[in-house]
Length: 456
Image (tube, rainbow, N blue to C red; front, side, top):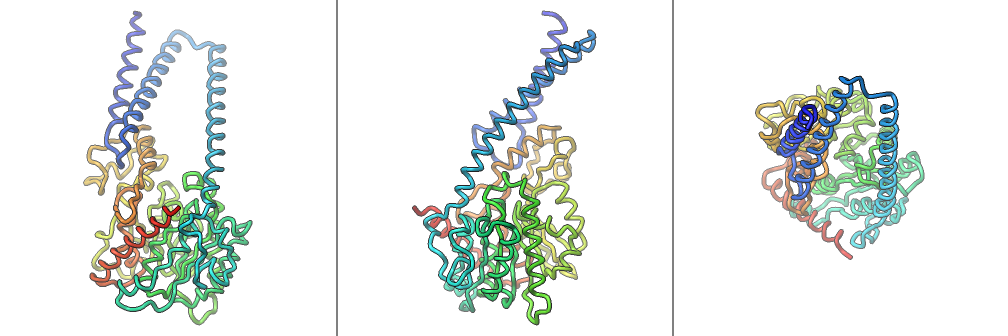
C-alpha cells in the first residue's frame, strides 16, 4: 500500500473515531434506544468521509490536481445529488403537510359537542362556526373549568363562567377577517368587562395551552377572559415559514383590543401569554419591547420556552429593564424588585428548543461554558463544532414527553412550573393550601382532557 494511502486511511479512521466519541457524549434529553447508536454511526461516517475527501484533495493539490475537467464533473455530480435530495425532501414535506393539515382540522369525538356557554366561542349566539375552529380550538374551547373545581380550590363558588374566545384558521379567509371576528366575539361575550383579559399566541397547529387560562378561571372564580387567533394547522416545526403571518395576526389583535379599550371607564388588566413558537410570534408582534407594552397598556407578559436564536436574544435585551428569567418556580425571589417585573421568561436551562440556535455549530454557547451548569445540563456534555449543533437539534425532537397528569419540569415540558409561575407573573396572591389544591386540580383537568382526546 502506498504510504500516502496509509496516511489517508489513518486520518480517516482517526476522524471517524473522534466524531463518534463526541457524538456519543450525553446531551440535554434522553433519546430512544435505537436513535443514539444510529446517530453515532452517522456522525462517524460523515467525519470519516470528510477527512478522507479532505486528505485526498490535499494530495491532489500537492500533485497539481484536480484538473478543470475533474472539478466540473464533481460540481455537476454534487449538484444533481443536492437537487435530488431537495426534491425528495420537498415532496415528503408536501405530503406530510397535507396529512397534518387534515388532522388539524378534525375535531375529536370527545370535543365534538359545541360549548353550551354563551361566553365561549362556538356556543349559543357565537359568531364563530364551531366546525371551523379545528382540533386545537375545540380542545381549548371545550376545557372551561367546572364550577365545582373552582369551589374546591378556592373555597368560594364560581362568580361567573369564564370567557374563552378562539378563532380558527378556517373560521375566516384572511388574518384581518379572523381578527375582526375575534374582536366581535370579545365584545359579544362581555370580555372587556372582566377583571383580566389574557391574549394568547397559539403554536403553529393552533395549540393554545389551556392551563394558564384554567389557573386564571380558578383563582379569579371565572372573572376572566382569554382570546387566541389561529394562523395555521401544522405543527410548529413545519410552521416556521408562517412566523411573519402569525406575527401580523397577533399585532392586528393587540392593536384592535387596544383600540376597543381606548376611552373605556373600565379596562381589564391585559395579560400576554405565549409558549414555544407562540412566544416567538407574540414577541415578533411587539418588536419595540417595553415601548410597545406601554403603548398597548399591557400589565404583564409571560413567555414560556421561547425558541433560541438572535430574535430571542434581541427581545430579552429590549425588555431587560423590567424582566426576569427563571428556570423553575423555586427561583422566584421571595421579595421581587420594585417596580415589579412586568415581563417573565420561563426557560428551562436544559430545554433544547431554547438552546438550539445556529451559532452552536461554530461557537461554544454560554450554557455549556458556565460553571456550575444549569439544571439538567449534563456535566459530561461537551462542545464540538458542528456535532453539538446536530445533537441539540436531535434533542429538540424528544424535548417533550407528555404523560397526562404526570407533570415533569424538564426539557420543553413546562406543565409542572405553570401552577407556580403563572400566579407570580400575573401578580395573583395564592396561599400555600390554595396552591397545593390548585396543582391537584390542574393535573386532574389534564387527565380529563386526555380522556376526552382518547375517546372514540
